[in-house]
Every structure is written in C-alpha cells, then in structure tokens.
Image (cartoon, rainbow, N blue to C red; front, top):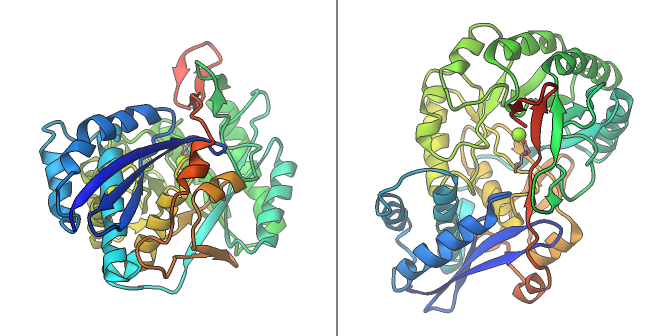
Length: 404
Ligand code: KDG
Ligand code: MG
C-alpha cells in the first residue's frame, strides 16, 4: 500500500483546523489532525513543504519506521510544530491500516480494555451561582465528571469562563494580536475554594470535580490551593504550575496530596519522564495530536502505567474531531485510562468532520468502523476560510506578563 498523495487541508468551521489527508495506490485514504491552536499555518507549512514530499512512495503500513524517519530524520527533535506534524502523519497511517484490515483502530491496539470512556465537561460562569447553574446543565445531560471554573471577583475576565456551549471555549479572537487579560493570584486563590465548597454542597459527594489552573501558580501557591480543595475531594487539579521544570512537581507533591494532572502542552515522552517516573503526578494529559500521534502517545501511557499514573487526554475544541476519534481508540484500549476531556464541537465542525463515535450517559464510545471512523468533507471544508486567531495573554495588575 504505497502513499501516492499527502494533502494539507486548512478550514475554519467555527475555529481553525489543519488536517492531513494521505491517499494510497489502493485507493484508501487516511486522515490525521494537525491543528496547533494559534500557530496553525506553521504546521501546515511543515507538512506541505517538508513532510508531504517525503511520504510519496513510502509503504503506508510501516507506521513505526515512518515515525522514526520523520523524528530522527529531521535532526531537530521534539517541539509542538514538529510533533504535531508527525502526529498527523502517524494518525493518518493508523486510520489507513485500520481501513486496510477492516478493523477499528482500537482492535489494532489490542482490543477493548473497557466498554466505554468516561468524559468530563466544562462548566463555567462569571459568578459561583452562574457556575452552579452550568454544572446542573451537565449533570442533567448525564455527565459524571465536570471541570468547574468561575470568574475571579475584581478581574475583568478569566480563563475557562462563560463558554459552556459548543464552540470556542476561550476568546480566540479573529485579528492581528491576542487580547490581554489581567491576573491576580491572591484574588484567584480566594475564590476557588469557595467555588468547590458551593458545588459540593449543591451536588453532593459523588460528582467528580476537576479544575484547570492553566500554569498560573508557583509550586507553593499550588500546594496551598491543593490543600484548600482537599476537603471537597477534587478529581484533579490541572497544570497547577508550569511543567518546563519537572522538578517543581516534586516540590508541590511534598506539600499536598491533591491529585495532579499535567501534560496538554507537552510534546514528547522526554517532557514527562521525570513527572511520571518519580510519581509526581497522578494523570498525564498528553494527546495524540500534540505528542506525536498514536504511536508516541501509547509509549507515554505505557510508561505511565508502570508508575500508576493514569491518562487524562486533553480534548478541548481546538483538537478536531479527528483527534477525538483517535483519542477514543487509545482510551478504550489502554489499561491505565483515567478520564477523557470532552467539549462538543459546533454543528459546522461536525458537518465538516462526519464521525461515528457517540456520547451517552457521561461516556463516549469509539467508532466500530474500520480505521478511525471519522472523515473530512473537503467540499464543505473549502467553504470555511482560515481566520487568524490567537489565545489571549495575561498580565499581572502591574503590567508584568504572566501565564494565561
Ligand atoms: O489551545 C489551548 C487550549 O486547548 C487550552 O487552553 C484548553 O487548557 C485547556 C483545557 O484543559 O482544555
Ligand atoms: Mg488545560
């Protein structure tokens, strides 16, 4: 099964997505997500200008060899642009292999290790009361796990607030420059424990509660947050402090037993090796799209399994339905699955990427069709032109740039 074409498709059905479509001489096609939010065209160019020509004539069945060829062959290793581009090729080849075998991808990964995949949704609101209303919406829809975020009194806007419905979860503004928000750790640390107390009081002990700090605290601030949330049994506290320095999590770990999740911005096994092998975290959140595809993600999760670290893959709306399809095949097949993030896409996005995975009662179910069980409608995709859009940036109240 030789590769005869590798095409990059850029589309914006509500938000930007980059997709790689690989065609073989057998007539089969496979697709992979190559979306890197806010830096989409860098990956599109990497694929178009540097990878697509190398794929032509290669045996589509040689997934591992192609992975190594693109990783070691580039000389320059890791990084989000490279790893997202490699991921797109890798996922497209898994899709092709599944179609060629007549099997869904999870069968190629060893078959089901569970019947269904527990997901968490995003509840948010300007005030604690607004957030409680939003949590109700998820509980009524059958969710068993909900991420809770709320506005911080005294700050004009806060990450994760006010976008409960499908579509952008963050103000991904169309325009030349990112919007700027203001950040105060003191104000934030005051409100989050009150939010958790209110949600537990209203919804009782069983609902799983998650929270995303989005890399904005120091290890000791994060430890204080962890301790303040423990009485409300958080499922996890996500990205409490930046992970470039993996050792920071050792410090955090020695000061709180709150479960910690990390990894949506990490792109390789080397970026989380210390986090995992020292058991400084409880959940690893790397994804198929940004961490080198199914081949590399499986390696990360297998390493994590040895250290009782569970998966919790990133699944925000900037990851296309192709990534969600791939994630579900991995989630259902690995032994150390934890939870899957899930944000429904807009109807336009679902139309461009028709898929057969489905949600019911707080769980997602992977497709049983050969391959990934998702396609791209290229004619429709062409109707949605790329629009430059960036994530916001944060500044402290004195103007210092801070993590958003
Ligand atoms: O593109 C960045 C988003 O995917 C990220 O901000 C979302 O943190 C996020 C999450 O946990 O979904
Ligand atoms: Mg996050």
